[in-house]
Image (cartoon, rainbow, N blue to C red; front, side):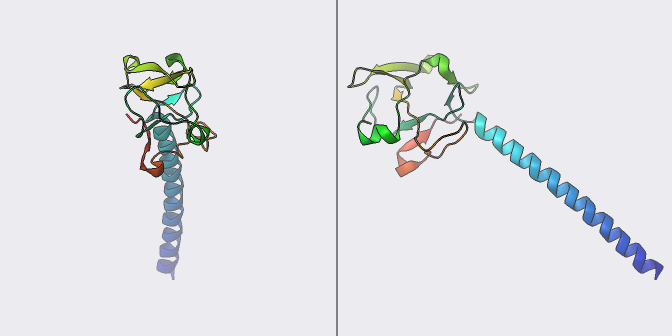
Length: 137
């Protein structure tokens, strides 16, 4: 009888430890994932993701009209960017769009937001139609 009680008590202690360990590791993984997500792509100074469009050509945007409504142009200057450590400010420039406004570029590619990204850190536009991409480090 004593042996059964000792085994039962040991099982309860082990189950409690496993639960505490699982809760801790889940929180750590979630925090790590969130931190990693917010730091591994180019964003503006508010944390909003910036995208490139494969159909653009060097220093020329091909996103106008309906495209521009879903993919608003990033008109900011480079002081409004949150640069990952391995991305240089020297890789940024501006182009003049057909409407006369200046658009910020990265490596000669115009930059855009995605209209469904409503909070800092969201990246819902990455991979859309296989032509919209985040700039990852």
